[in-house]
Length: 165
Image (cartoon, rainbow, N blue to C red; front, side, top):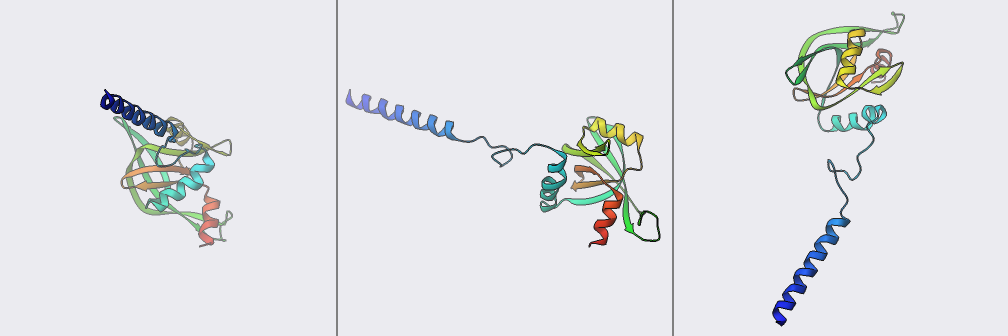
């Protein structure tokens, strides 16, 4: 009887300790304790920096999107913003003669400009904005053959960044 009572108490203690440990654990997602708010500021800053640290290739150009099955294909015509004081804007946009097709990642994030303000976009909203302004420059963060981050780019800002390099 004592062995049975001791075994029962031992199992009860193990169950209680397991329950306490499980309840005290913080939920983790993606290796972080708290997920940040997905804002345009976060995506253009911390998230873009993390993708760069992880080895993303950064490409700038004009894009067009095409839906193929369940996925979206982005056709990129690469461009480069060249600072040049001979132009009224202080720069010109050069075609690099490089084109490529990549898929839009399943968890890809998109930041566009709505009414002059950066905004997190859905793929459908990007399609709509791109149809209205096909000459909009975008900076894309590519991991392999997948675009993980698509950011509307400002040519004047890119020209300023190129001058500071």
